Length: 294
Image 1 (cartoon, one colour):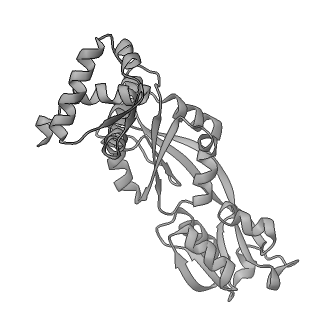
Image 2 (tube, helix red, strand yellow):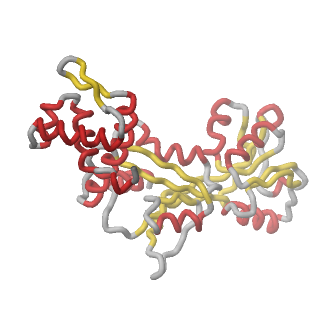
Image 3 (cartoon, helix red, strand yellow):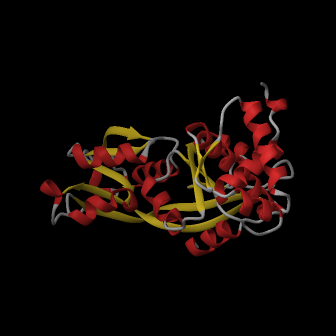
């Protein structure tokens, strides 16, 4: 059997019967006779070569194969309902939200941003991480609904993008409480010769920090440069060095007191943006999420 031989109409009928658990109720919902519905379910079973239901008194109970087929049918017809809901400006059943984020963005920031959706049982989240240009390509191909970034992008006739500012946060130098509790440094003036871990050269913060140090004549001793904020968090926690990063990255360590803020510069800021396409079919949940973050 190949895909062309699979009758999706019969599969839809099976899906409705499986969800109802009762042939008569499913037939009434589908506005066909019970005998016609039963015949079409039998045709699907014959095509698949497996029984999908077994009787338990007056009820229909899924077989092991029936449970497997139902899982696929739920995805197929759930996505179909989602498609119709998107096109008609409403949502039926589950709604999928596909979020891309640049690899240098804090995972804690991402979690805080999507937190309003975590308790929503009608939302399925798809989260991806990667380089900005690759994510934008997937966005333009409608494989993502939004890209979270820490740098702005411009729109041009070749790629119509909407870049919306979500907010900013100060950047701090943090260190282990065992060595730095109660101590403060001027940033960057007092960093000369001090061991430090920094965001990698691709991170938007790195150019800001390097320019500040150059102007102040400060030369901290670079011990590590890290693109991934989760790894930079671990280095800040375990190395004994100072680290430059957004406080949201180490929010738990600062709260528990294992790390302390050693210094901060008002000239160092990380900015956050939500990038979407200029699409006709708006996603209301996404719009509310963006507006709420702003």
